[in-house]
Length: 386
Ligand SMILES: Cc1ncc(COP(=O)(O)O)c(C=O)c1O
Image (tube, rainbow, N blue to C red; front, side):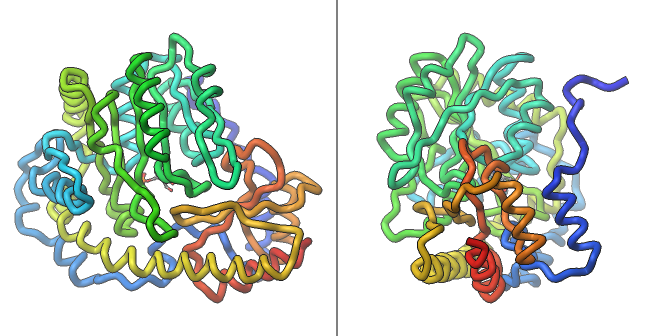
């Protein structure tokens, strides 16, 4: 009855079962995995946000497949504020970064074609690829006082069916930026082998260290490049379902890609008018949101370091940017078993590294956007396990 691509294993994994049971028993839990910014006590300008959604222009249906020009111009202004000129014509609005991925994969890949993705990285890729009939091939990120792309392995994994390379810049959950020399190498490989670069920049604005280089791929021109971002992270408004996709690269390839993407976008016209009209205001909200979020993430990181300094079993990996920290912990059992034991014995919930395809056991991921008191108490309990 059903397509093979939906033959997912829908059984709850042991960690979700343990979590559900813990909650059902009404026991307390310090959740260090929170990633929904609307539940973290940040102060939003609710009046401005709600007013923006009530624009009378929304009463008229006047669709543009790439998205309303005023909204695209606001996105262009976001890049202009970083000193980068992105023509509004190169921008296509989507309802999420996930939708942007799906448009790009549909534009690039025939069924069974391959896309390279970083390992470790964000777990949603597997489903996105299944839905588009695309095969994911992983290229390793190596950790050596910071993360870097293993280009030797990346090149070995390119096959005649490879269509593109995904880079998450900065990556989730490792929190590292792609470096300028890595961009150069990616450009060389991708232009020589006719591959597209797909750059996910949802965490670009969240540098945790002063003076961190954070260029954008949005004007990368040496290889066909699709850059995506959106308001879920930039302004902490995932409920608005507003994101975008930018095409750049050699002129002819870029124009052809954008023309094809426009047909896909025109087929769905998925973004509603009220949200499109509100995008200039919603983007403005980023200033206040990012100030609050970065203050909290830096404070939590400092607290984590303070507690780590008092013991010797665990350490944290370098975090350049983003909303997460990666802990190196003794690998005396699988990360999943450890995460379950932490729920049952310490009433703390963290993500095991295997959730993000870390290549070995011994990694846990904690969210830096957790409220400060909860974070400090949760880390204390977590470290008391070792
Ligand atoms: C790297 C990365 N890309 C994309 C997304 C999803 O963004 P959106 O809400 O726009 O689909 C997330 C969400 O956590 C993410 O971590």
